[in-house]
Length: 167
Length: 167
Image 1 (cartoon, rainbow over the protein chains, first blue to last red):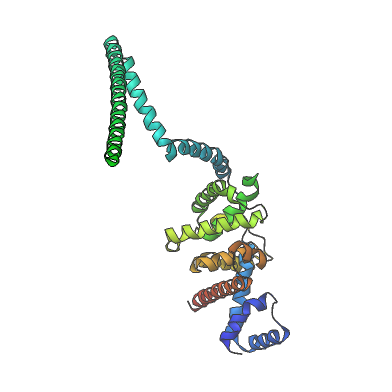
Image 2 (cartoon, rainbow over the protein chains, first blue to last red):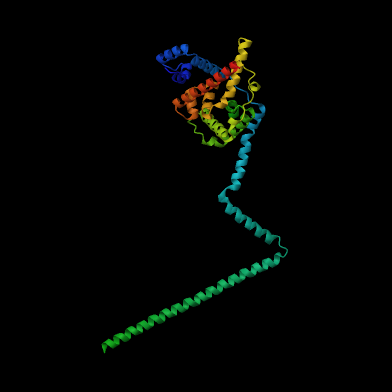
């Protein structure tokens, strides 16, 4: 086996994951090749060193920060969600417009004149609607009389035509 | 409950990967913030620890790629690893400490995917099956990454030792 092939197998050999044939081949190679042998001891040393790194304790300061995380996040998210929900934007727009109009009406110094003009406008609108109804009735009567005249003239024409035929 | 059980695991994973204590604390906070926001997506039929470690691993690697930690230096080895196991002789203690320091510094030479595989296997002592679940990769790929990582570390260690003896 070449040194390159041995290098690839050193880690599985270290973990005893190789078959007996490969194991013997590596052992024989390591006995005769100082370079691979040195590399293998370094790998063993590296693995041992990594395994010796202790697990560090978390500082109290960090734990405090972690405990303050959930509440802070949740509160922030709810308020933002509520304010930024797109479906609520038309509602906010209408509500703002209504509030502007309401405050204009409520805090205007000449509130009575506004009331009067609103009353006047309402009455004007009401009388306009009444006039429209009257006009509509008039047109309806006209249409009915037109229809009757038209039917009479048709009847007349029909009788004239029949009398001419008899002659 | 979640914080008590998992903060140490997450913090140590972040620290072993980044090698910077403050960075690891920031990452731990970010990972828990992400966990609280995505907890609703957790499928209760799956292993929670593996799911959380996958989330942590993905976040750590994404941040690493974004911030290019490879250009920054890891914390000094002695600072956080003084509570190491005792050795049979002072001479051995010095040699092992030096190896551990070299390995600690060399971890930054490994690519992010290989580094996390080595950390999970050789520092945290997880089984290959667990690592495959956390990394969502086939068992063979994980073994290959761990093998490559160990070989790289062994080569770095060997080179540094040889250079030291040459001097």
